[in-house]
Length: 87
Image (cartoon, rainbow, N blue to C red; front, top):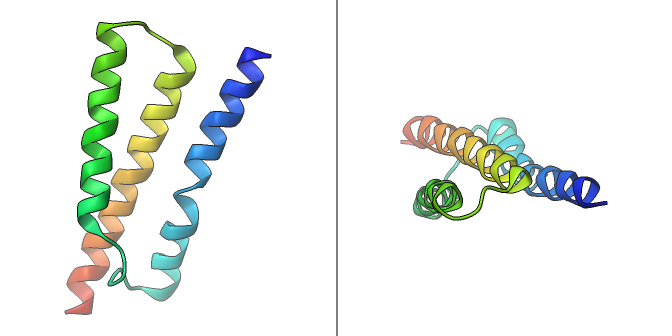
């Protein structure tokens, strides 16, 4: 049961980023997206990964943090890519 809900958590958190990424790709614009929010989220994921290794390792949390971090990095890439094109 724990693995099932851990997997659902990872899928849910990862899917949260996809609509924003797809919208930026479709509209080729990132003017309404906050770069600072995503940079703070990236810093938070990095801190969470470090904290988890220093305290208690939980596999599903690591997977969640890593996939969340990757999605944030992809989002920041598109924010920067389309922000430059908007100008």
